[in-house]
Each structure stands twice: as C-alpha cells, then as structure tokens.
Image 1 (cartoon, rainbow, N blue to C red):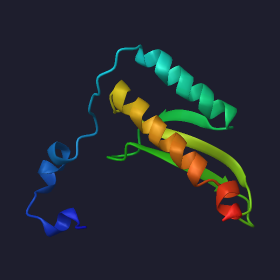
Image 2: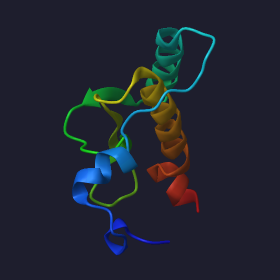
Image 3: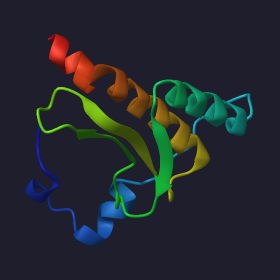
Length: 110
C-alpha cells in the first residue's frame, strides 16, 4: 500500500488519476434501478441524498450514534452529485453493503 504523496504525480493530475465518474454497461433503466435501491434503503430506515461537498469521495454511509454508542439515532447515505448516474448506482450498492455490515446493531453483536 502506498500514498499518492510517495509518487511524482502532480496535484493537477489527480482528477485524471482518480476520476469521480465512470460508466458501466447496463441493459435496464438506471432510474428504475436507482429507485429500487432507494426503496431498499428506505426499508432499512436509511435516507439517500446527493450532496455537493464530498470532494473526490464518491459516497458515504453515515450514522449518528447515541452517547453510549449502542444504537444509531439516524443513518443515511450521501452520494456525490457530480458522479455519473451509473457511478451513483454502483456507489449506492457499495454504501448499502456498508450499512448492513457496519451498523451499530451488527457491531454490537460481534
């Protein structure tokens, strides 16, 4: 594992090296896929929102915890609004997986 600071890449090259968007091929309607994923999130008590302040981060699963860290008060997923629709869908899948694997209830059981 290395950090980009250990390379000779210039900061101006970062957007080319780490693009925010990419596209995957699909045969369906991304809008329907996105709506289906958002319905899954809603059933899990998650809100999904697009935000503009994530920088190069593609998305995040976030939890607001009680003081005793035993229970989530609120959980949500943020998606980078600058990402392509297909990238947002793949990021949403990724963040939904985080919500299942790393939520307070799951962690408490370990």
